[in-house]
Amino acid sequence: MPHEVGLIALIAAGLGLAMVFGFLATKLRIPALVGYLLAGVVIGPATPGFVADAGLAQQLAEIGVMLLMFGVGMHFSIDDLLAVRRIAVPGAVAQIAVATALAAAVALSWGWSLGAGLVFGLALSVASTVVLLRALEERGLLDTVNGRIAVGWLVVEDLAMVLALVLLPPLAGWLGGKTPAASDGNLLLTLGITLGKVAAFVALMLIVGKRFFPWLLAQVARTGSRELFTLCVIAAAVSIAFGSAELFGVSFALGAFFAGVVLAGSDLSHRAAEETLPLRDAFAVLFFVSVGMLFDPAIVLRAPFQVLAVVGIIVIGKSLAAFAIVLAFRYPLNTALTVSASLAQIGEFSFILAGLGVALGLLPVEGQNLVLAGALLSIALNPLVFRAIEPAQAWARRRSKLAQIVERSDDPLAELPTTVDEARLNGHVVLVGYGRVGRRIGEALAEKGVAVVVVEENREIVEALRAASIPAVSGDAAEPAVLIQAHIARAGMLVMAVPEAFRAQRMAAIARQLNAKIETVARSHNDDETALLEGDGIGKVFMGEHELALGMTRHILARAGR
Image (tube, rainbow, N blue to C red):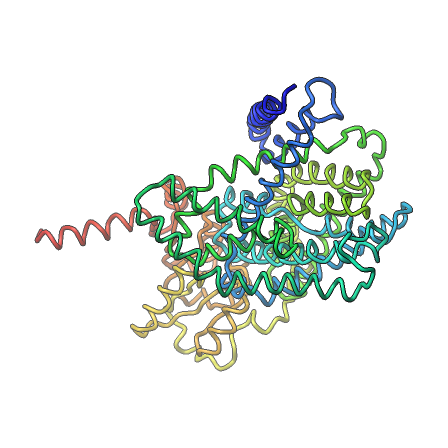
């Protein structure tokens, strides 16, 4: 087949089958990503029938990697990470260490080398950002405290894997793999040169790139040409990735990541992300298809116990580690379960690490197949893991002693400080959630001198509120003990500023049991949630779009003199 036709055949077959299998996957309520990987398996060399050009697929996969990492960089937020840094940073590092050690120990028991075990462990330790974001969005958890902790945790994991991609090539020879051609055999010198090049590239991007590329984007935007704007964004992403590899010797992935970081500093970053999304999605699909082409499904029959071990490490091992870490930081049971479910899968970084490990002679091809099998199965199982959160929490609540043990009932932040004047807590407002909405409500009430007790799951926020002499309790307001600490029995109103309708229902039900006369106020995202909450007897429900329309209408009528 001519080279040009081979490219067209690969794109046609890859995208066509990805659409079919992705559609079937969503109908079965599993992530479409599983369908994209299966499409690659079908057109790969391990299955009969049409076999796509693996060389062309690899080049398209490289573009897919660039655009995937570019998207990660575009969504990287220092502020979001800093907001949950006390749990996300040490938690992610500890979880990576535990998962890597566990997987490496298993790999060594199979007779693999230390280098193979290290790459294998790192590949199994990092969850998929793509899968996580979609799972949180589907469940309305992205803007919640639990969602922000999970995303911050994943950001730290991604940064750790970026560092691993940088360090593995110079360390490959020492770990038993192929020594890079540019290396002179001196490990420290090679490592120093590599880190120096990376530091120079990062400095150039953050000092020069963060000023030049947003300026360039603004100049192009002034032309009014939408296609030229999109072209500028894509050209910047690909050219920075390629230039960084050629001039500084860093990976395409790292270059594309920092391309996203520097463009994220532009005022036009949201438009850039939105208008390049279709192209990024298309190449991301081709990336997952190309990964599926590398997978040999026969490994499930050839090494079933090894596949089960890999799935066990991903779904059970590292999830239990994350669960224990979150509880050790005194966060509620609900947070620990959500973070654990979020991490019970692996994805794009695992594929990139496994591919690099094979290229460097560190990881056997069998290891790459095991990583791919673990990804397919863990991503397919992830929705079931998320659905198990509520039953698991309900089971723990039925055994209150168990729930008290795992949630550390002796937590000082779970009780109102003794300095609070409880005489003022009569007819006060219990405000659940102190995010963007809750903060504005709390500040407005404070200005009017209204007594408020804040209930918030983010411990850093609770500590900051207490430092400002604002009564606050740390915990899940869907737990009776937490609302009791907020003196709900003497409160006049419960304001639920959290964007979770089902949890708000439970909070309101508990509040009414403890205080039959309490007034309840909630927020919702759409008409369905509003109807659900109002049908449950919530006193007043505010929907974002409705209130925005009312506010704009009032302004327009006032300006029109009506």
